[in-house]
Image (cartoon, rainbow, N blue to C red; front, side, top):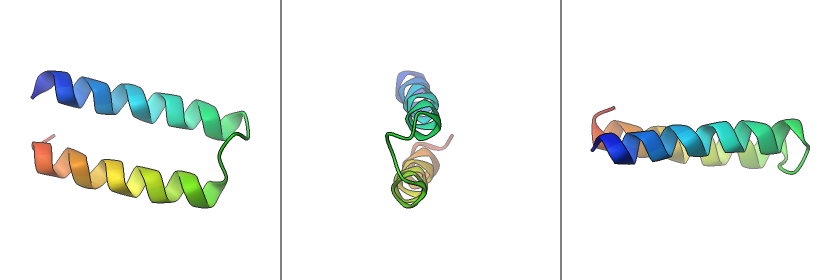
Length: 45
């Protein structure tokens, strides 16, 4: 499970970077991060 949490955290960082570089809209970022948060809860992290 640690590997899965590590990968989710890396993905969160990359998504923040994509948002800052304006590669993602705020709406898409919010939608994706909501889904990631749900996955994190399911993993227990």
